[in-house]
Image (cartoon, rainbow, N blue to C red):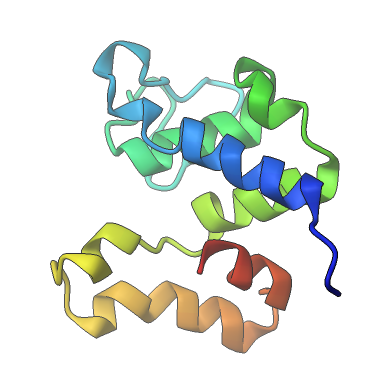
Length: 125
């Protein structure tokens, strides 16, 4: 379609605004006892990987990020897909910081499994 998708643009702007906020160590989340485990972190652990920390907040405390929480559900799902599902780091690609196998392994598995929607993959690229 030739029309501009304002909701999609808003989701991209929200992602741009929140993407690296967990690089601020003072706001890194701790895995709660009720959650028990998240991406290899156990209850009581501070999630030190900023991308995993953002995924934790998006998944378990979206209300802490009003620009994300205010998006329609299908847009929140696209943002969460890019941050929580693919385990892909665009910076590594741009700066040649990782071999292709480790860079694309999870993304490839997600796409092959059929869990990746074309619109969600396109959202990140």
